[in-house]
Image (tube, rainbow, N blue to C red):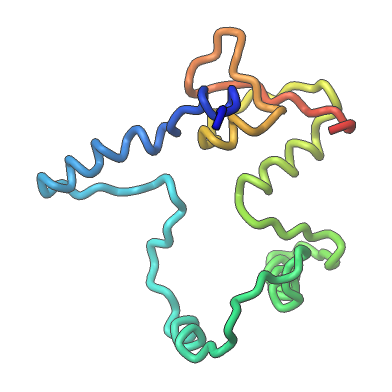
Length: 152
């Protein structure tokens, strides 16, 4: 099977490159804090664990793309307590932080605009994202995000 040029050129993300060092440190008894994965650092609420144990459906299906109503209502309530009045149509639920960042950049940038960003992307995201350009003398920590054409 002939691999694509992208497949041949892809590199491990910086996080994957650091993992052998983290594993070596752990083997020596050194405490390693993994700050890259957004892992919760607080105990999971007992109520949530109880719901997981009692879940009997055969498939844990995806929720609606706009988010569950109960989640949207929770967000409205949370922001109302902060004095920020919103309606459901003001909220965009995303599947992850990277999707939220991409949406935010698309909201503030017009076609052809540049946003200078810290390299927050995993290698695979950078590799597949037509908008991310790490050229013109940038280092591994910075790059330019070019707002893609609406024709994509």
